[in-house]
Length: 432
Ligand SMILES: Cc1cc2nc3c(=O)[nH]c(=O)nc-3n(C[C@H](O)[C@H](O)[C@H](O)COP(=O)(O)OP(=O)(O)OC[C@H]3O[C@@H](n4cnc5c(N)ncnc54)[C@H](O)[C@@H]3O)c2cc1C
Image (cartoon, rainbow, N blue to C red):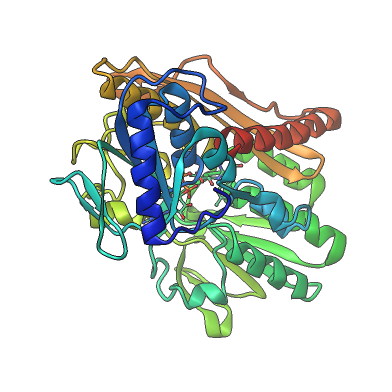
């Protein structure tokens, strides 16, 4: 099934056929190593790092489970490595993935739809034409929603002038174009929101890679980070690297020194903090974030704006039979990252397989690795293993680690190569 855009009739016909085959246990699927055990349908909303991984691993674990994977888009553009597009080191096509392999090799049904309503009483999701799709278990992995008007004046229209580029795709290309068009000597502002937000080191990697581009092409320019936080991930390593590679080019203003942007005026390209106003040439404003809209509108998020889950199974603590994972979930000490979403998806797939087969889910273990590039030959990283302790996901003492300060150029260059290796393997694991 190469064409992922089904008509409603064709889709329902195909579901009928897929259901019949599953009941007979007939399909022999390359990439699925196990014999069919159970006959159930899992519907997954959101085919990013969390949802696509969960779909694939459900089919790897038990090919008796019928998996329907739904996404609003037919292609997925990764946020990881999107900062390299801003620097002109990669093209957007290098970051674009389709779902054909999941369909062809794992027998997953892909449906290009936006899900807005869930009916938990009937165990069904409602599609855009009003028809229902029933499930035995539902997985929701919709990533994040951007909260408009935080800062004041920053809405969808403003984002066309001051791109956030916090969802990769057209916004990434717009920011890249603005950097290309900027004069030498211009000021680029980056305004990260207060935590929590997806990819805690992302804004600082972005500053580094934009500096990499500016140093080569517009060396009189400056980057101003107007931060709503007082510290950030891998801070010592980033600051050391900035001093070494981009001296005088990046200025970081923490919240304690009046960094937080309160209001924007896109017409005048001005950002207002409590203490100052900054007229800039390019403004990358990253607004506050919550769990994906579909979770909020269907009662899966709590007052924090994120979704509480049972951390052993990722089943919502608010609505049964629905699992939420990835950026939208409240996952204790784990950051909101592709690496975390991929790891949670495997735990969730194992738990669902156990539950559908009448077994107890096992004790989970998670990992997260996060590389950041300072330049094409300069990488830094942090990683950790997590387990469940006192009903919280907590880092296992002594696991993982952070790149050392004062490492050699050869060490940093190796980490940049490992970053590319991480990207290649996680995208293969998720979409391949
Ligand atoms: C600039 C930047 C750099 C980053 N770099 C890294 C990195 O180096 N390493 C790392 O680990 N992480 C990185 N991240 C974080 C990472 O991208 C996210 O944490 C990750 O994508 C979360 O996965 P997810 O599955 O929860 O959501 P997503 O990957 O966002 O997937 C959600 C999917 O759900 C779909 N969807 C949403 N709502 C609906 C609906 N109602 N109906 C149908 N479909 C829907 C969307 O179209 C999307 O495809 C970075 C993020 C940014 C912004």
